[in-house]
Image (tube, rainbow, N blue to C red; front, side, top):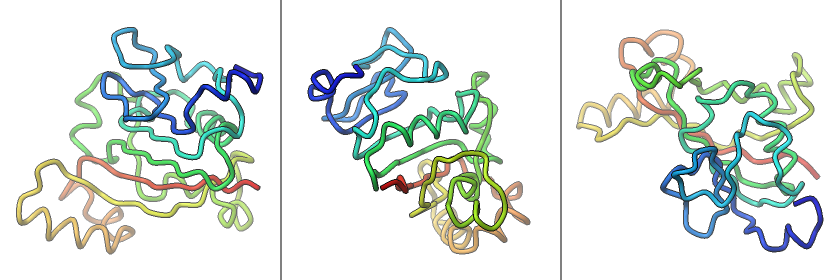
Length: 185
């Protein structure tokens, strides 16, 4: 898939870890054989057989928590993304009961998990990678929220630092959603 002819046949929307519910109009990648994937591939095996700078949107729904090396994964996402591509991530939150229910989960995430890929953080502190992403949105989510969840989620989403430092184990949310943008030109 390195030549441009094969890249022309691949949609520019990518669904990594698509399972049986691949997003419409997306190119799906999953290591499972019993999936709706267009490409059967273990995402921990880098580089991925996908064209560079091809995708304008990437979805990673309930997949990052299963992978070994998040820095390498995000570098690969950066490689395959077009400039300013949108990346949507849904994963278990660090205090979620969902996190350790599945024995294949390796990690959870907090609202600051992707700041290490932001240019501003790298300039002021340190960097693990040359891959750069702008964090456009972060939101905590719960399944089937009750009235009190709506109130508590609203407070947690407005005051993420306070929530994560003081209350994340008192009121654990299940998932965290990220909207990133590839910061490449």
